[in-house]
Length: 326
Image 1 (cartoon, helix red, strand yellow):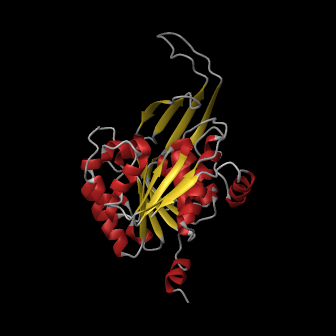
Image 2 (image 1 turned 180 degrees about the horizontal axis):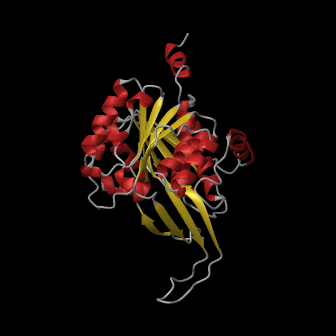
Image 3 (image 1 turned 180 degrees about the vertical axis):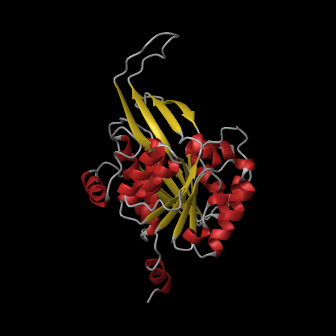
């Protein structure tokens, strides 16, 4: 008997996620911002659960995995709205902390084009890896981390990853955009510490100072055992133990790109956590990302397992471009 698989099957959670959760107010069809005293009418407004960690969690739960969420929400109607949505997907919310600060809100303007945002951090401003409850981690096969802020919390992340891995639990992280513009070089130490490291092509180019994607990935493989770089509609590339694999994306009509990267991460990690090879993980990731952008809201278009397999089957002739290197 495979003792590792047997131990994983006995875990309460397939994954624990720590990170941001907020409300997304999506405004579609705004041609101009109102001038003082002016009212502007738009085509539509809709309310959704937002935040990269929240969107990742809901997408992964839709695919049938067992999740718990570590985060912090306000004691308000918006916080309850997020909790209710998590509950509807079977996500354990018992580790979510409450804050006297209101739940964060992000207003996304014109999501079908170049999105603009007006954001209030709210309770997410109090989020820290120190709030990651290790009793929940011990009951999980995997932990997905978000909220990395470079030099400001690098040591905190390195310590947390070491503590998590000491429990025999695997880790993944998506570092996101560095709003400080420093592109802290310590990121390469973090790459080597986690089991699966995600970032997009633009972020990777900033961190490495390189432009060609194969050069970028090869540079990162000096530090990371398993790295995945998202290329948007073009697809994604993964490198495991120095071996590069690429799969092209699916061409679909784009309604809203909010959460596409988080949906990709969920699809990829679904493959990873169910023991699939990297090529299949990339296929799942690309499919989840494509399905996400086909509907408004960061989680509306994300699929369950049946819809995912159906989409891949129907689009099987639409993503044949792939390569790998030794």
